[in-house]
Length: 113
Image 1 (tube, rainbow, N blue to C red):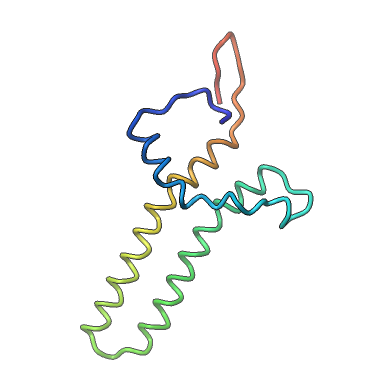
Image 2 (image 1 turned 180 degrees about the horizontal axis):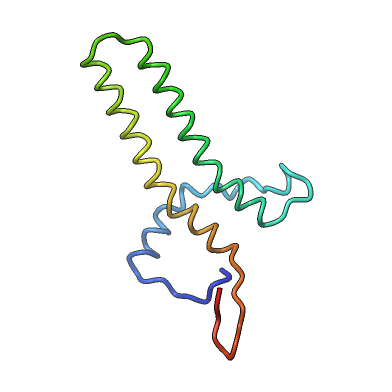
């Protein structure tokens, strides 16, 4: 971490539980030669947006094929639920990566962003 902050127990426990969604096993340097930590942040920040766009595209494909209003309502509910759960699951790891990229500056024995 670049922040010298100890997070409270509920947040740190939640982060350790959500570590299964951390895709740190793929080194970014192997995929993109000459990348730095900002490339890592960009990938983590845009990856979930791209996945939500795929969810939306699948919604458009499914809704276009249906004329029944009841089935259309079910499709809307399903895709909204998937996008919402996905955003809640991905928010902690993405925010962790973004916060790790921040560089603290020490001024008068205090650290500032």
